[in-house]
Length: 113
Length: 111
Image 1 (cartoon, each protein chain N blue to C red):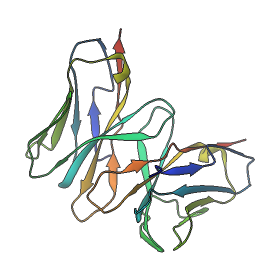
Image 2 (cartoon, rainbow over the protein chains, first blue to last red; image 1 turned 120 degrees about the vertical axis):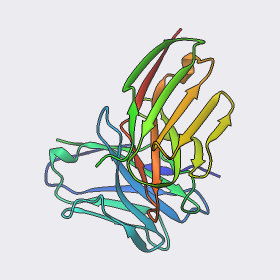
Image 3 (cartoon, each protein chain N blue to C red; image 1 turned 90 degrees about the horizontal axis):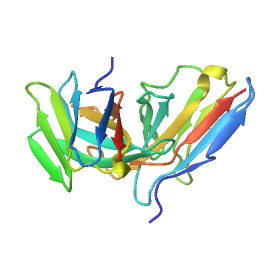
């Protein structure tokens, strides 16, 4: 049973471009969470999704950011018109149920030039 | 506002000594969890303690939870160089299924 898979591992974008980050949860996990981490800081919650539904997006910026978790395929975190402040490590985690431990991917390091 | 705050922010100890990290939080919780993060890597789950539990053990780890003080501690006994990492507490609030992470403690074990 493979762990949570995130790709790409590193992503470089110029200001104004779009960034698409992918996350495949562990097999059998229907709960997906996205977090952002700046250097030397903790993880900041962004969004919580179950299959085809956004459950909690209270941590998502109102503009430029969106997330989906379709019936088939990976969860996608999409950042439009990236700015330098979007540079960070983005981590995805999954769990089979709520009130359980999370399994994290290795993250995507986004660098905006 | 930040739910979990770890204390200390950084800790350096000699190999073989015990390491204690503390976490305080603000609102009522379903459970509290501790995670470890090695530099540049994802987080690894260490232990989960539910709101009706007071203490839990896993190998060299011991976690306590005091819901009246809204605090938890993580004790690592007989530390090893491989324990060098950042440690985060995370809380799941009542009726709130997301985990909120603290700012972390950077632990360095000196060989």
